[in-house]
Image (cartoon, rainbow, N blue to C red):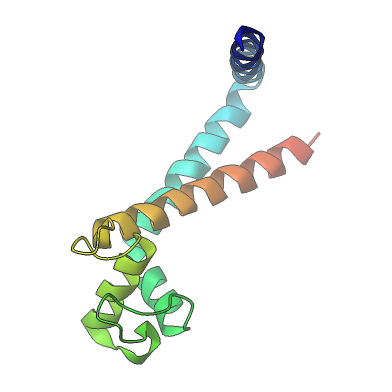
Length: 125
C-alpha cells in the first residue's frame, strides 16, 4: 500500500518538475497557451447560453426536469433547460442547474483552447 502511495507521490513530483522546466524553458509559448486558454474560456463563458441553446435545439440534451424534450422548447425556456441539463439537471432535482451548465461550457472552452494551442505550439519547430 505504501509503495503505491510513494509511486503516486513520485509521479506527481516528477510531473510538477517537468511542468516547471517546460515553463522556464519556453516562456513565450507558455504565455501563448495561457492567453489562448483564457480567451477561449472567456468566450465560452460569454456565449454559454448560445452554445447551450444550440446543443439543446439540436436534440443533444434529452429532456428538461419537467419531462419535456428540450428540443421542443424555444426562447428562454430552451436556454434555461439546456444550461440546466449541461449542469447535471435542475437544482431542485439535485443538479447544479444553469450555473453548473455555464461552468461546464466555460471550462470546456478553456480546455479546448489550452489543448489546441498546446498542440499547435508543440508541433512548431
